Image (cartoon, rainbow, N blue to C red; front, side, top):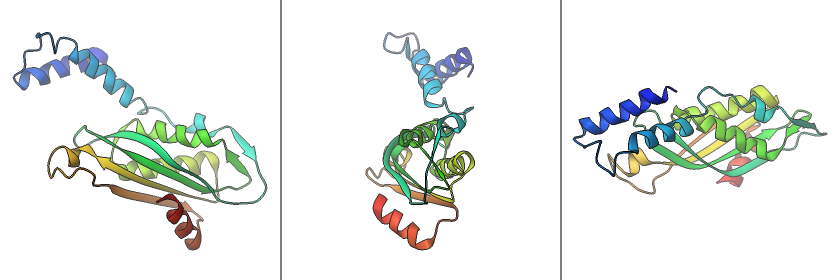
Length: 181
């Protein structure tokens, strides 16, 4: 990210909104906003490869579920946050990853401008690509501030998405969905 360009863009936006960028309460705002976006969008050029590369050999193919992984991301349509929880379930094929690594995978994928549907798919694709399980199911429930603070203004409304990749039998899907909700 070009930090100086971002600072100037925020100054221009504030001026376009009729604000005095030099007033004490706004003097440091352009820098703060630029720094905030740099942090919130730090996953743009990253992959989850590093997070999912340390694996452990296992026997069998029981389902692994990491649920209630808190996340926040940024809507690419309104540049407003959406946040909630994610569950990652996979059927190992002779290897598993440390549970904290699934949460870190979520963090990397969430730190981008995007849609919830994209985020859910990105996580599933990363698990498939770097962990090579038999199958993966990623479930996401989120509240979108672009819907709760503006527009229809419906606080508390949630959007649910889920993606299944690979061989994840229908009966196992139902079991996982019942567990993560």
